[in-house]
Image (cartoon, rainbow over all chains, first blue to last red; front, side, top):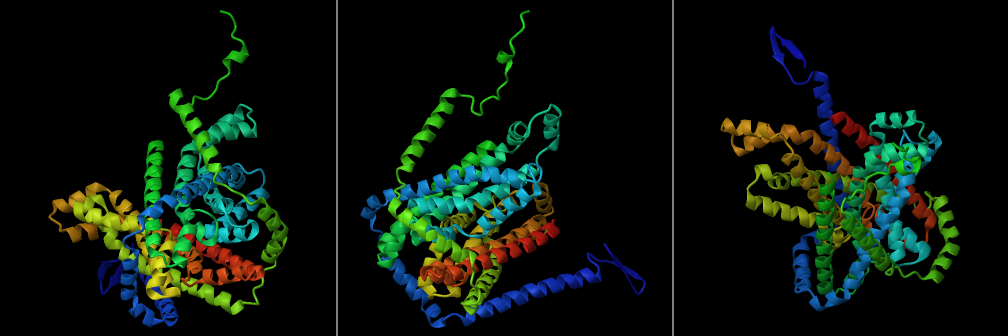
Length: 270
Length: 268
């Protein structure tokens, strides 16, 4: 904390001149980025449509209410598919993530080269959204629930592995040393010294990702990868907004259910 | 005393769930669910065989990314995505503050708490793509709809985590402030803000990176950004261009993550 001597008076300041200037420069860059971005977007916008938006949304809600309730009977199947895509996708991702985790963690990897490969896999998996994975997979194996499961698990592998390998790197190393001192093999060390330490994190991360996956699975159908998104897409394409609103209600209920369940499970393990 | 044979002394870890009835019930339920769930996978094996045949073409397209062919479109899409990410993060971070304050149980009243939580739940329940559908209908195709979408989801995300951060603050400081007769704004500014500000800035930086990623998908329903270019490339079977777009997304996300990691580390 600098004290500045001005005209014989010692004035205390939170920061010295250099860091104050640096700070203001940071604010300036942020504001500049915002203004330029805003301008860029404004240039690409047809303001006539924006002015019209109030009427449009009123019209839309008018068409959405009342929802076509009888249609709900045809939605249980897709909703069940959505749940299954998320759940099986999470399970597959968890199974795939376990080896990747131990290859990626600094303290369990057999060789730095394996670590590099595992980290690369994690990065690629994480930076591509599951909807984009779905686009690619639908192009490969055609539309359907299987494509959805593959898309969900490809995205979730990176997420789970990343959080899990960070947990592995943060474990208490003393237990590993104690195991090694008894002459335990590498596998035994992992099973008895590392796994018990990361189990709560493992369950927490998996359940958290399952909750996210439910949300993502609701839209996979928009690109043909199964689930309720498919019905949503066809309802919107045929401008049947009373059906779309019913689908929104169903999605909302499904998400609420999954969030409550995952919060409960995570609470019980900590 | 007779020596116990080594076999009988084997140790096995105690089960996670003590009650055997519950334990086996959960296992049985899990298996039953998996059997039922796997029935909803209906695979058209003919289509899969066809796809595997074709996959060499798709994959070779992804492996030979073509940046030049649609260079201007890709660059424009990426700039649009970045602009959407920056504006929506700023707007979202500004607008999430009232909801975050209102949704923190320890400094809010029950009625306000309920309303703010409701807004957060609504904003968070729907995937960005669904919100984007609404905004595209409202304001037309283009990045403006995308910006509004990402702003709304940012509000939901940041407000929830801000509320949790406020609920996790040290209660004694707030109590000390109240004891001096501080008004509600004073309590917030001097008691709460210093405690949550580092975490809030960290979350906002994290969200910037998240918004860029999400901006790549809302283009599928017409909300601008690189996603629109990607969808076009995919539907034209232009896998070389799609590969180039994916590669640029991965690179930019990596760069964003690296930078945001540095910023967040410096804030701690």
